Amino acid sequence: MFLHRLSRLGIFVFVSYLLHISTPSAVAAHIPGMVQLGGWIYVDRNNDGHLAFSNESNPEFVIGDVAVSLFSKLGNVETFVSSVVSDNFGRYLFANMAPGSYILRETQPVEYVDGIDTRGSMQSLNGQAIPSGASAGVATNNAFAGIVMPANVGGDYYNFGERGLALGYASKTSLFASAPPLNPAAPEPMSIMLALVSACGSCLVRTRVRGT
Ligand SMILES: [Ca+2]
Ligand SMILES: [Ca+2]
Image 1 (cartoon, rainbow, N blue to C red):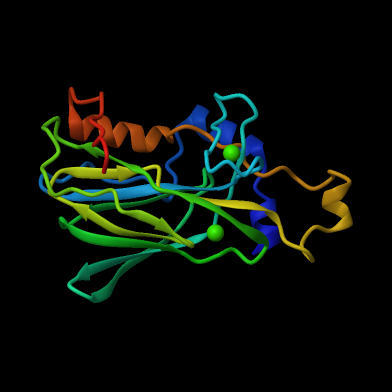
Image 2: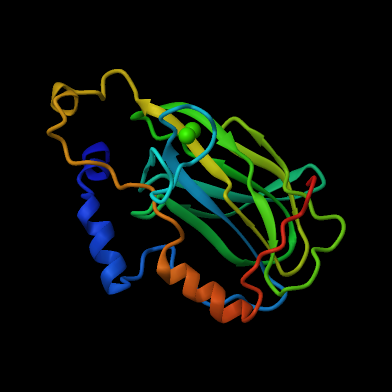
């Protein structure tokens, strides 16, 4: 899996943008009343908990093929809902879920030293104010818990950061920089942006819940 991750050349990302190739995280339009949760898996080179995208200074790298699982929570009962793997952009997304309380859990990629996970923020998917009772939850190790999502709310930028290659995976090859580069972190893939635009119409300016 390690070689599989490293084999993804940056040029693939560039070509994908030119051709608008759909990625595994491409989703259907938002269904009214449903909610969504997503984020990125990335190498947090400066260990600050912030993913620097390719349009920022010192952009960081994303990690594909990392599993993230979604659990619903009712009372003290956790129930597995679904699992996805991050795409070539390091992007993962759970779309069109029922409103409710959720937990996101990352399966730690063994090739990387665990890093800082950063809680995301919530946006309105229908242009209306986010209902009271919404909560962006809290970050715990390889997880985000206590996310409470009323209807038509999207949670994004729930990012799992890793520190870098673990001992035993940093081969001489990679030290000499002859290994293919990881994909640079990229802003929202075009396919997802189009889905959001078609679903949201004029609500391109997303509403952030303050203090949640
Ligand atoms: Ca960073
Ligand atoms: Ca991790």
